Image (cartoon, rainbow, N blue to C red; front, side, top):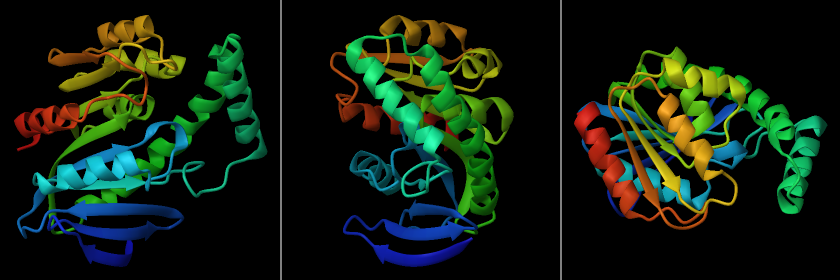
Length: 240
């Protein structure tokens, strides 16, 4: 892991850009020197690590005493996408706008994204846990499909918060039964891109004995800010 820049922000949080092979990432840490728990923060379906909503959540969470990391995984953010990926994205947008069936297109796009992203996130986690300022345990926050895969295969993930993810590939719907860590699932009741019933069915499928569902009115981008605050209380119960 090679750090390429560092700055101390107004809230005392230290923001560092890094590269790990071909993987670009950002690490936010609180000003304290003591080893801190780590939260991996992933945005949905290939949006960049610099997306303002993710950065705001990351800075707030770091100021609450966590190390927070995000990356542009393969096909995400600034990293190149194949022609097939671009075509699948265009097909998915068109199908959603016209009301056509989207399951087959969604599988062809998101399934490979998860398969490519999960190993890179695990490689990043290996490098992050080797840093002296990070002591674990590890939480996950964000993109539901990727989070299910990581929680199912990596025992270092101790708790997870998932955002508005009724549409997940079939493989992750099956893997959800293997997830037994504490969960917080956020659901936007009127999410135009994630059918409500699918999200409720996914919540039922998780194997966790401790799982909480928060539902709020509004569309996909309408998650209220207080859910970020509640999320930090959730992680405080399980990571600190």
